[in-house]
Image (cartoon, rainbow, N blue to C red):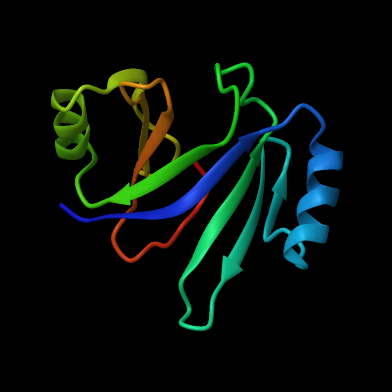
Length: 127
């Protein structure tokens, strides 16, 4: 079971302020900027990158800070494994559009951990 950290989601109460901060920090414009999501994509010299997502509804969903999302091949199998290792479900598996599955758990210390199952051939995207 291979997992890659490819998405970090920040719950934001001030989307415009958060966009300004991340534009300054990353030096790029968002590649997605819609009502429910703003996404910035970072790319290193090898073509790998991380999606930085700003979620204006994150606080409403119970997020209190950034959530790292680990992209996995089989979300349900990975979820079972992390639950067996002591995690607890925060948000169960859900389809966020087009078959992309996500879930969120807390580790035994209370830290949030997100899981994403990408569709075949897809990179980091909106969670």
